[in-house]
Amino acid sequence: MGQEGFLTSYAFPTEESMAELGTARAVYGMAMETLLSHGTTTALIFASIHSESSKALVDLALQKQGPRAMVGKVCVDRHCPDSYIETTEASLNATEDFIIYTQARAAEYGTWPYLAQPVVTPRFLPTCSPELLRGLGDLAEKYNCMIQSHMSESIDEVEFSARLFGFSDAEVFSKFGLLRGKPGPERPGGP
Image (tube, rainbow, N blue to C red; front, side, top):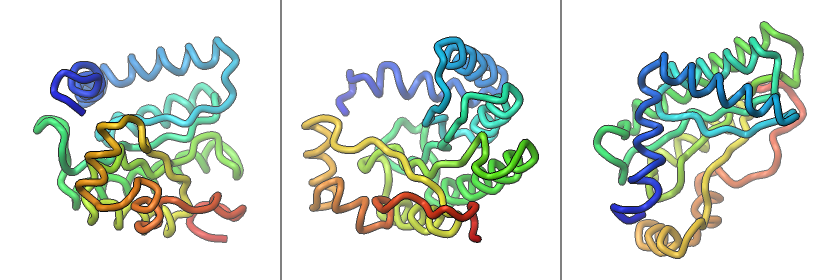
């Protein structure tokens, strides 16, 4: 979490570059080719906060017909660089739009279980406000989506989360409906 850490030096700048759709398509295309060339059949993927780039990743997985891709549009509304942050409302709206887009596009390519599926993706607790977490839990429930995040990854992150929320990561995720059983067998959005 420090200013010289991995997130600041590598992750955030790389993810910020995905704002450019051409860059995102190139990077995600190479990633899909690498996964396929190594025999990967299923991948759970954090995309970026950029909706159009996240949708491009879904489209690539569908066009290539693999690997099965569970893709998350990353959600953050605090404690990130100014150039890599969303408002709570924008994050929730973009996430819902991404879920609807992914489910509709995937349905065009086959039957359930779809080759591409949306995943609700709070980056990790320090980068998400309680309001964002609550809204993401509601979206996961409404659309019967899987959830992915980072959890208790380092001593610094655990301590920072505890200062922000007063509970363990697992307790916070559970409180906001983001730590639950596997989505039901019915199609996304209901039976």
